[in-house]
Length: 178
Image (cartoon, rainbow, N blue to C red; front, side):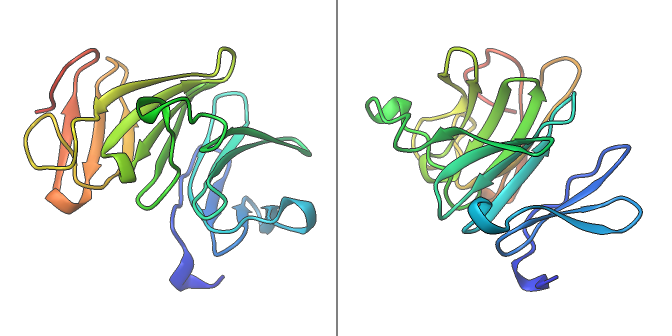
């Protein structure tokens, strides 16, 4: 591994996945490359998440795209160019991105460049701001470089607000965190 480029290491009951400099590695019994070779070249995978059902989602920072790996297939599910239908709908997979595949076809993305967390559904390709989105800042309704995200069983969203040095809890449909 090129350790200084290791960005995300999610784990489930079967695998440990590592987002390295330009590839995704899986550790089960041994280390194997999941994504990154040949046509699947990644430019800087920042975040990775494994959905129920086994699909692996990757936020590629420099490629500005989110890709899904299921079995041996690779699918581009969202790109910042595709979702640019005006500023509120722009998805940037930029610096500080966190990614959570909460259920098949539904992704939560922490969008550091726009100080928000969005929910994106694969079926209707709808982008919805679920936390932040009120400009960069330190108020309870703002973030300053959100990154890691977690969704609990009560649908509370927990967001690592890195530049404000805090973890915010956003209850579902709330206008501000706590």
